[in-house]
Image (cartoon, rainbow, N blue to C red):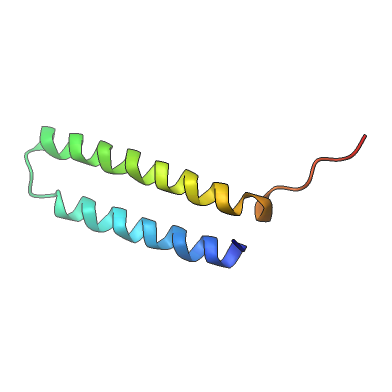
Length: 65
């Protein structure tokens, strides 16, 4: 995956997270907080998986000794 594709997919995840959080705004505070934490945890797992696919685009190769 190239850097541009990573950026596009990351942006899609951010939009999905924002929409899900907006949908939870009418919930009682405790339930909204619990749902928000679950959404953010899921977002982070998806983002980590996405980064794993594009890692070589962002990390410099290790220097040879």
